[in-house]
Image 1 (tube, chains in turn purple, blue):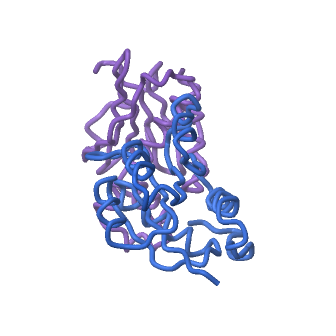
Image 2: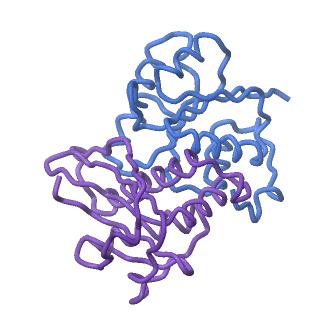
Amino acid sequence: MIENLKAATFEVLETMFFIFPESLEEANTLFHGPGLRAWVPVEGPKNFRVGLTLSVSLAREMAANFLGVEKDEVLPDRMEDVVKETANMVAGSFLRREEAPETFNLKPPMAQPMDLDAEIWKENAHHVLLAVEDSGIEVFLDKSQ
Amino acid sequence: MMAYNVLIVDDSATMRALVRKVLNIAGLELGECFEGANGREALVILENNWIDLVLSDLHMPEMDGAALVKALRQNKMWQTIPVVLITTEGRQEVLAPFFKSGIQGYIRKPFRPEDIKEQLHTILGEAWIPNDRELEGCDF
């Protein structure tokens, strides 16, 4: 399951953003400053969330790549929209890879700002930590819904 | 050469902007490009404009892509308008009913600009103006 989540993330970041994340042991040390978390609720026989967390600076870079504009031209709402859309695409790719039945439905993505320094970053069975140069990306599967 | 009026339906303004950009660089003879954030907004645009092609997301609030496709196919004025879904949905059992209801194709997100180009080429055929040079190395 976690491998499919990781593969879905790589597919989205590489195809849409030309970002090539790496699995690094020290990825947990790369989460600093203001961040954004976006997730997609998945409803069905079991409810869960698929989401990702990243720094505002990386989100801005992704939005600039996505829209073909300079980083300082990216508006905050566009940045949040890009992160939400990224979570949406990761969730869709994940469900396809898991061959989830049609009774599982993606709901509209949501997002919230975060202080990345206030969290403890650990990889486990439901959390993947990836590195993009000097920034971290967390991808998660939250079954506590 | 006929210019095509395209309607892009997606609740993400960013995704609409991206699709519009890809259409602009992909070589399609674009007329007007309209945008709606859901099926309901799309129907209002369809009521007031001549639309030649609809590119629609599936999962949207208020009125989703499924309801939009149904409304289009039930209306004599709109039932022949080509519809292409651009969606995160990739499960064939979810998409199969849409093909039965007459959509012309689907593009799964994440997509490359070439994916949109190929789909539109298939649907619009001779109206397509190949423009490979501009797509090469396109980084959105």
